Length: 344
Image 1 (cartoon, rainbow, N blue to C red):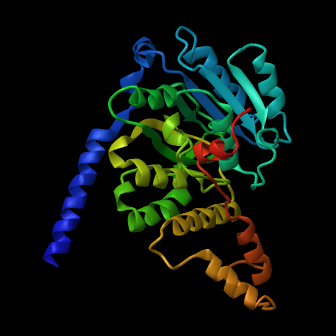
Image 2 (cartoon, rainbow, N blue to C red):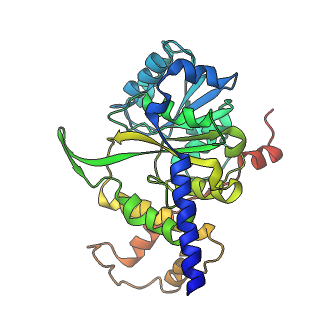
């Protein structure tokens, strides 16, 4: 018992040390000339995945290339990779390319079309990494309603100073009930699913305040050695993979203050939670519990008409088919992929 208590105490001290040493404020890097000078010839690519974000994408792109890059060429390449928008997202970005030469918009389906994986956010990020060229690669979501350039320069700063190779943004998240009415309680999947899983299986990562946040960045050489997943499990998968391959000392987080974005309904959150749990359990090699066991048991008894709790008219058959379809495909590290499929 005494040994366990001592181990826990040491782990807590290590976590506190990491929090103090590797947590930054975006305001530390607001001097854009200093930020530009710190690049020292290194190039930066920013990748933004989109799917029906016509209400927010123009504001985000215009602020990045029209404000952040106004005096100093901090972002060398901005790639919007679209996952099949049915609104005017792509039209809007194409119009913006007429004003910003560093902006490109590409279709997820047209990048490596021979790769037979499920479409999704992670697939867009992986293909965006393949398509981009920067020494440093940043990711940013496209549904942010209160976007500000500190959300980008806050990610860049830590990567240009010290030993940080991977940086993750964190922020206050609120639920937007009406146009001007906000309440605490955003990030429900984070608090009810992701953080408990990390605390249980990867306690060294429990200091990350927003492990599922879509604003993060790293050096290309690191990201090309990391496994991706095709859907919503991509963020937690990358976080775990970076930790396992590079260690917590190379990882940091930065306060991006506050983030308002589009919220999903409870059904979508349920599928997202399932995907995230599945990724964590599949990555943890010490666990025997895995969703495939559940699927195997289900398929053996596929004629059951038993109803699932709180699912109304959705029977067990439909529910498990839904969950099975929400599983992410795993995408190999890009470096490994390119060794077999070199760019011609």
